[in-house]
Structure formats: structure tokens, C-alpha cells
Length: 175
Image (cartoon, rainbow, N blue to C red):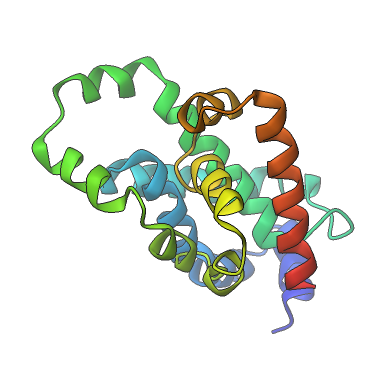
């Protein structure tokens, strides 16, 4: 079934279209969410919430503004970041297990696996090292621009400009 038609049916609250879109995107969405929250159970919960939110807010999606996958991915990323900033999440992470730290260490420079989760690995690997660093922090690890600025020891204006330029490079590669 053509994606555009599937999305239209989804917007018209067709349950079969919902199921097909869920099958198409759930693994990628889960991968992105997991890279931010580092907890499979929480990632499962957020992913479910994302699809329900997309279902209820489907009328706000417009193909003129971008691809459906990008739209739902932004919902997922924002939900995951909101979760990490929540009081309950922070309290839970105060007594972290060693597994969490091992995962952080193992994934510190693991942009290849993160980007493969949403299928843009080949494009991101073509970017320069400065772009990779900014994109990894902002989009795959859930950092805010201020946090990325502190982590990379760069002015926030530089982070914003580099982010905009790097995303434009990715768009040019994809199109």
C-alpha cells in the first residue's frame, strides 16, 4: 500500500492503517527512544504512548511540512526527552545499576548503531566529525542545546549554527 494513502487512512482513524504504520516504524521508534532513556521497559511504554498520541493528533500532520516518519520520530524524541527530565525518572536513576553505566560507556562513541536504528547510518557517516558529535548529542542522546554546548565546550550559538548546517547537509544528501 502506498505510504501517502496509508497515512491518509491513519488520519481517518483506520485501525488497519494504524497497525501497518506501527509495524513499519515501531522498531525504529523504539531504538531512538531507547538510546535516550536507556531502559527497555520505559522505551516500550514511551513508544506505545507515541503511537497513541500520533493517532489522536494525526490531523496535525501535513506531508507539506515533512515525511510522516520524521513527524512521528519528533514526537518520540520529545517524549523520551520529557521522560528523562521528569522527577520520577531522575529519582529512579539515583540508584543506577552497573549495567546502566556499562551501556553508557559502550555507547559513548557508538553513533553507527544509533543511526542504524532509523536507517540513516550511511548519510551520517559521511558528515564531518564536528557534525557527528553535535548530531549524536542532540538527536541520539537527547541532550539539550545547552547541555551539548557544555559537553563539547562550545558556545551555544555555535551549537545552534552547526546543528542547522549539519541537518541541512543531511537533507541535501537524502534528497
